[in-house]
Image 1 (cartoon, rainbow, N blue to C red):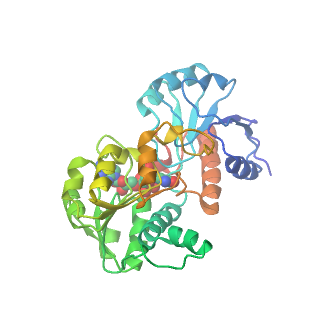
Image 2 (cartoon, protein in one colour; image 1 turned 90 degrees about the vertical axis):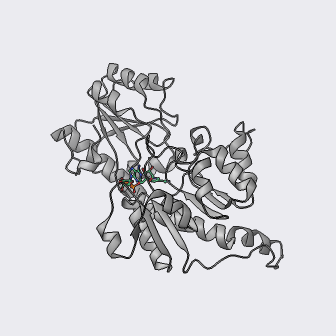
Image 3 (cartoon, protein in one colour; image 1 turned 60 degrees about the horizontal axis):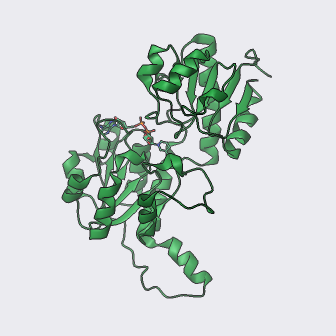
Amino acid sequence: MSLNLGAKKIAFFSTQPYDKTFFNKYNEDFGFQLDFFETQLNPQTVALIEECEIVCVFVNDIINETVIKQLAEKKVKIIALRCAGFNNVDLEAAKKHHIKVCRVPAYSPQAVAEHAMAMILTLNRKTHKAYNRVREQNFSLNGLLGFDLFGKTIGIIGTGNIGKAFSKIALGFGCKVLAYDIVESDEMKKDGVSFVGLEEIFKASDIISLHCPLNDQTKHVINKTSLTFMKDSVMIINTSRGGLIETSSVIEGLKEGKIGYLGIDVYEQEEKLFFRDLSADIIQDDAIQRLMSFPNVLVTAHQAFFTNEALTQIALVTFNNIKSLLTQNDIENKAALLV
Ligand code: NAI
C-alpha cells in the first residue's frame, strides 16, 4: 500500500540505469515522485532543480557552499546521500542553511570488504591475466607466480563496518591482522586482531587495506613519507576514497618497486572519469593513464559497493531516511543523520 507522502518530489543526480531500476522498484511502497538527472550535481547543474524539497546525491556530486546556498534558495530541505562517505558535502554550510543531510551508513559492508579481497586475490594470483592468456591458447605459467596469503600480515586502516567485515575475511584466510583506528574494537581484539600505531601498520604489513573515511586527518595517509616505512613490494588496496592516496608518490613507489601491487577502486580525480563510458575519448588525466600502464596495478571504477544486496539496502534506507525526516524531522539510526 502506498504511504502517500504528499507525492513529495526527489531530484536524483548522477543517476545510472541501475539507480532507476532499484529506486523505482522500492518506491512502490513509498509513493515519492522521482525526478532522475544523469548529470552530476555541481555549481553549474544546480539550476536544473525546480520546485523540490529533496535532492538525492552520490559519491562524486559536488555539494559545496555555493551549491548549498542555491539549494536553500530553491527551498530544498533534505540532501539524501545514497552512499556512506560524505566528504563531498559541506556539512557546516548545510547546517547554516537549515538543510538536513542524511546518508546510508552501512548498506552492505560485506560488498566492499569482499571486493577488497577480490582485488588482493586478482593482483596476487593474476587471474585476470590467466583468463586472457588461455583464451589465446597460451597455457604457460611464466609470469603468473603468486604467494600464499596464509600467514601473511594484513594491516587495516579504519575498522568501522567495512574494516571489520574485511578483517573477518582476512582472518578466514589465515592471515595475521593488524589494525589502526582512532577507536579500537574489542570485538576484533577477541577475534585475534592486534591494534597498533599507524607506523607499525606501515612497517609490518605485507598488504595494507584502507577502510577509513577521507577527512583532514586521513588525506594522503599513503604518501612519500609513509611509503618509506613500508616493506619492499608491499601491496596497497584502496576501496575507500581516492584522496587517501597521494597519487604522485604512489606512481614513484611503483616505478621504484617499493609498491609491488596496487589495487584501487577509488581515485582522487575520479569524478571526471568513473561511472562513464569514455572508451572513445582521449583521457586528459595523465596520472590515471600512468597508473593503468603498470602491470601490477588493478583499477576498478568504484564498483566495490555494487551488489544486488547493497543496491536494495541503498534504496530502502534512503527512502526510509527521507520518510523519517519528513514525518519526524529525525532518524532513529543516529549514524544516518549528519546534520
Ligand atoms: P564506518 O564509519 O563504519 O567506519 C569508518 C572507520 O574509520 C571508523 O571506525 C572510524 O573510527 C575510522 N576512522 C575515522 N577517522 C580515522 C582516522 N583518522 N584514522 C583511522 N581511522 C579513522 O565506515 P564504513 O562503512 O566502514 O566505510 C568506510 C569508508 O569506505 C567510507 O568512509 C567510504 O569512504 C568508503 N566506502 C567505499 C565504497 C566503495 O564502493 N568503494 C562503498 C562504501 C564506503
